[in-house]
Image (cartoon, rainbow, N blue to C red):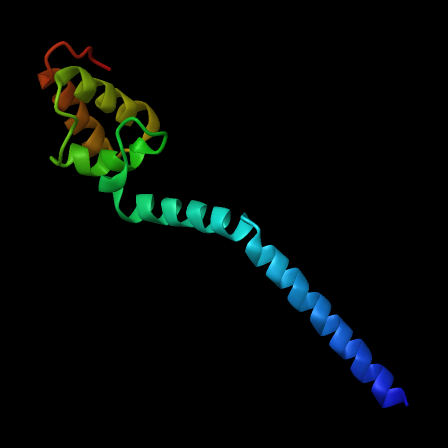
Length: 111
């Protein structure tokens, strides 16, 4: 008799857990969490996927200072360079290179 009660309780607990898991998976929460993780990982591993207009554009600064693509127009490049100067953590060498790049950009005020 005690075994059958234990078995019924175990079946009931398993059913509740499975139902709760199904409801959780059917909700949008796992998709939302996965989207945030994917975007965060994708942007940190592949800075080229980030737009210069986004909040995380500072991840592009290392590559841009090293000679990879700044935005095409001088005004947009100047804005991106100043974003890098203010938002990114730069080494002394990067700061000097960036200052030189800013000086070469037409109409871009110095830091």
